[in-house]
Image (cartoon, rainbow, N blue to C red):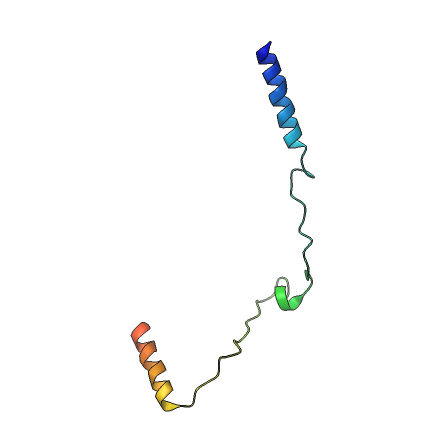
Length: 77
């Protein structure tokens, strides 16, 4: 009798878990700004490459020399 009750209990548990959600899939994410091309870009297109705001070329020869020494140290050819 206990085995029949355990089978019925496990079957009820499986059926209750199988009934969760629409086709067992989580709800779709209805987030904000889904049509914003600045955030997500053009779907199927190339990614947007934005330049950093603080990337400014230096004209100071001393700074340029230091930058080149660092580049040579970390990225030798």
